[in-house]
Image (cartoon, rainbow, N blue to C red):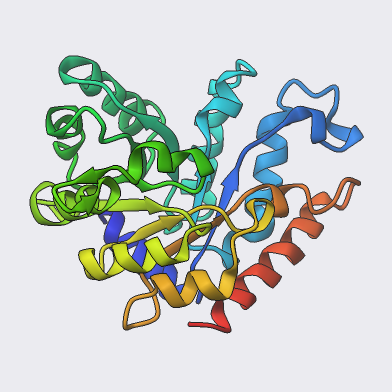
Length: 270
């Protein structure tokens, strides 16, 4: 089953547009995990097992694993999700962006080594930096468009022939790059007006929406701006607000309650 079909199935089965970001910071782990060699895997696995029936996707951020020399734990985590929670897609958040043969190796890393269902990429270097990922049509390609950070406006708001650069990216991906139907876009919840503008330009293309929770994006505004006519089309990501909802031994249960509250808050506006 390809990424888009898997995502659509997860939206319906779990009645959820919530994506849980897995950004493990050992400094924030409960004391019981402090001395475990597999602490990152165990922490994330517990969060996954506690929330899998409430989400449409999981999104591990590769930097948190690589910085802690825990790539093997990332491999084990994705394998665990696929085995124990089949049907929940895994988005590897790596924001890759390079050309030709190098991009081919990044694609192999994401889709062969980690077996991710989708990957985030940077479009700044153009089509030849994206094409190697399009050779994996069953996997998702989630392209940065209007990011949730304030500094994104430095480039994304530049005028390009009467359009903002982010608008040009949205139209380029929708009209020319999405030849296999595998593409999605990253658009931040912190900019609901721009989110609505992207939705208008790309139709029902899936949108990965970071920025609620710790970054302060408004759930109601996000859903109203980004949902499709069918009330879907979004992967609304929350990371820290769910991962670190509890600090004690009940951290997984606390994460579940935070995820449940977030999913239900999203659904109120669908």
